[in-house]
Length: 153
Image (tube, rainbow, N blue to C red; front, top):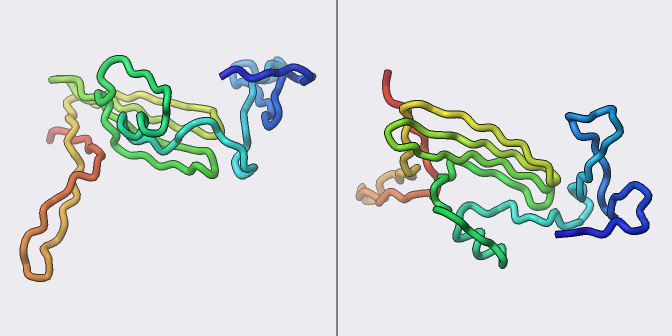
């Protein structure tokens, strides 16, 4: 998405403020930060997607290459009104372990971290319900997320 900066002395569009890039702080180079939370402006991203199906439903021009389910969602929290999102995903590497990716996004700025957990595996996170009033077992339900299992030492 291209935005016009015509008529703006600082090169920013309406609703944007400048922040110094960490690597060039003090050098005078600035990057657009985007709309601030709470000002009623659209952040331009759907923060609540939790998988390929929800992304396809909310993003009309989504393009996918490769297996969109290769990264498994471990946890996610977001606020559309405040423009932030935090997620943790895992990628199972057969016979080796799990690569874990943590993403934090606030007002269009993204920070990510990767960590490899040797020997770990991913398993579906299951909600186990207590027996019903008659003492009958209630079927467990998958909550759509995954857990990391570390082998015993």
